[in-house]
Length: 85
Image 1: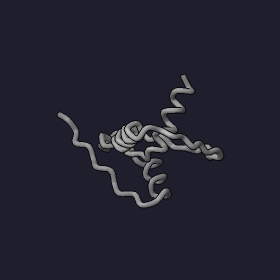
Image 2 (image 1 turned 120 degrees about the vertical axis):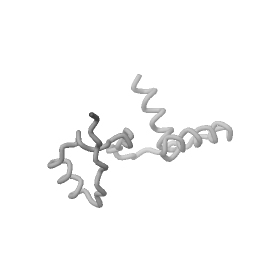
Image 3 (image 1 turned 90 degrees about the vertical axis):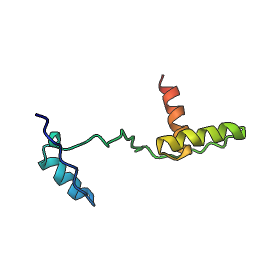
């Protein structure tokens, strides 16, 4: 018999989230809606001015929107991934 998973409670601040995670058994909750998230901790002290063909910029914006992030962050992720290889 399959156990029905509980929905996650609505948490409105960091304190509530920290308390919930420290006390709850997360295996009892439905986490299927979670998506991986990448946090940016390093300060951005340099700027890059780049000229692109409009169709390339439009394609970047479409891909960024599909990932749910701003297109400038998407460009930064693409650059980071390429440099890391």
